[in-house]
Length: 377
Ligand code: IPM
Ligand code: MN
Image 1 (cartoon, rainbow, N blue to C red):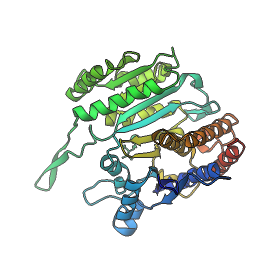
Image 2: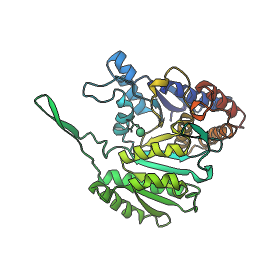
Image 3: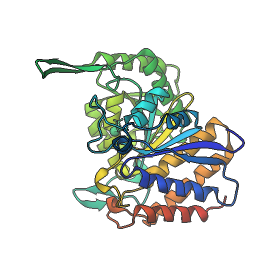
Image 4: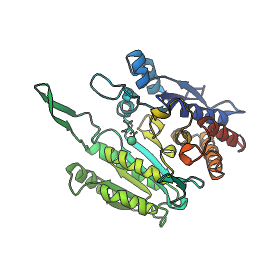
């Protein structure tokens, strides 16, 4: 951190990314009121839309800024028709690119249900799961697995005959993400909602896949270093039904990249939908926080999408900075933001369309800012 405060780089990206990020910024501004802001916000464009306009995903200065930042907040990337010449999604440099280039090996996705949040099931809005039963964190390996760029096609006579994606599981990659999950379980205040037991569940397909057997063997080895934490196991297919029927069993869950991608979208249903799902991409030296929902192009420009995932992403960012720099001021601001989120949700005061309400993205941001102002510094 410099004397001007923490440098936070904002990457709004595409579609509804800039809309939710503007509300995240509003929350940060409200937290900083009445005091010299302990952070400096700096915005950089980039993504699929930027690519269509400029022929590159973002500027080298923007990447350098992200690299030099104390923390990064990403909106979302991806735009229909925006593809790189090789077929990859344009804008990927900001998400997959940074995950790999900054070595953000753990994708940490809390799944917690706050009172007042509804579940939309078959078009109806109701509370299906009890908030006291949903409080877990899913840790997804973020740099290898099926996302390793070891892929290709075999083309003969102008025809694609074979396509291959190679799933790489390394000792280093598995060890560090699994250790992260155990450390997190050790630090969490309560353990699993079911029984208060500190538990890490390894989600894999080790009954079939070699890489998963290696991942699980690594898990078993590391689990021995944490005798106070219960090691737990689930095959990914079975996990998808247990998490719905018995979410209270889960405390911390760890999985490989693609499996983690899929189970976190499923888990978001328990917490009220993708509009509430935030993630932190955490490495040894860098971290990037984001709402998990993506750019939602069909809602772009309408200011209808739910900004709560971004509020949670901001909260995670502040907590990460607070811990990294042993800065209690930031921890206090994260607490204020969380309290503002919780009181607004429980009062049902900011229900966007995905919660059956008519509150706009901007109004939801205004209500959070107002709630923040009501909470003592
Ligand atoms: C996510 C997203 C990304 C992923 C996409 C945008 C490449 O789905 O963050 O979960 O697949 O990891
Ligand atoms: Mn995803």
